[in-house]
Image 1 (cartoon, helix red, strand yellow):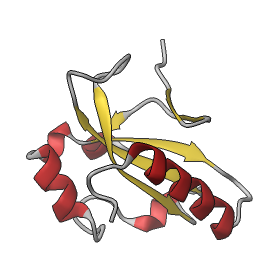
Image 2 (cartoon, rainbow, N blue to C red):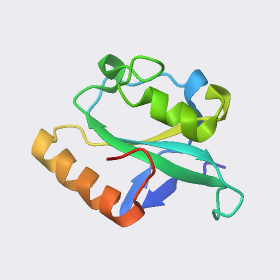
Image 3 (spheres, one colour):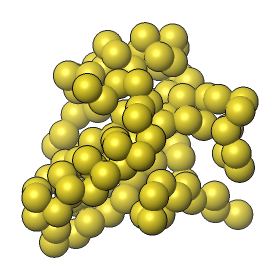
Image 4 (cartoon, one colour):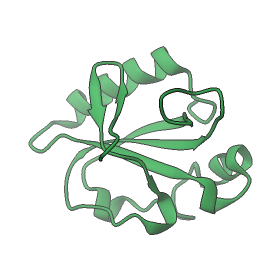
Length: 112
């Protein structure tokens, strides 16, 4: 059974350990997650929301500019997870609008 995650009114994919994730050639939003025993129904908490023109070309592990902040939050890379919201055909403006909305709602630790 797949357990997708909903943030705001957007249904993100099932979380995957970032070290095992294979980014698709697509546009959309992503959320970086850390373990959190107080979260429900999945024991994961958002620490960063972002948007991209192409997940496969974006770079996430070590090459993302916020990677050091993510590691400070999760301590070990193997505890970091990612979920995505595909937005094929979307514009950067559309993605940034939703990204801003989610950051305001969840106030993740690694978004400035």
